[in-house]
Length: 115
Image (cartoon, rainbow, N blue to C red; front, top):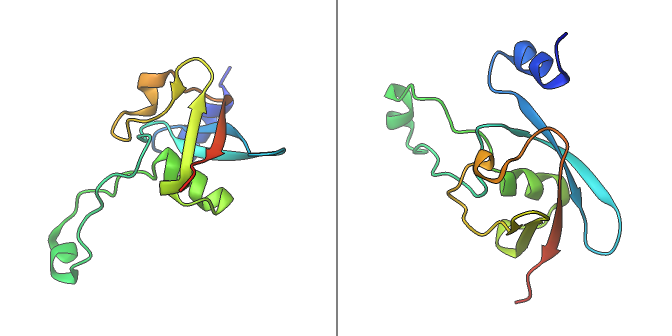
């Protein structure tokens, strides 16, 4: 039998998308999908220079967890504090989600940083 994450992987032909539940400040939550290869914070994107883009065929890195949270909640990355119950705050933007044991159905809490 095939799992839902394997089905998602097969459907898009790439890494599986993980469903992550983000608990919001106050009350409520939002579900997001994040590429299993993603990092916590933003990756350096390829150049926006058209000449460089024309000859660069390396794939774009997947959206990071914080970028996905920003899209879903409109909370800017700089204001996000993401906490995973088992590990605590997700402060190292360069670490892949796999370092934290992310899997389909992972739950985390979003707080807003002061200042």
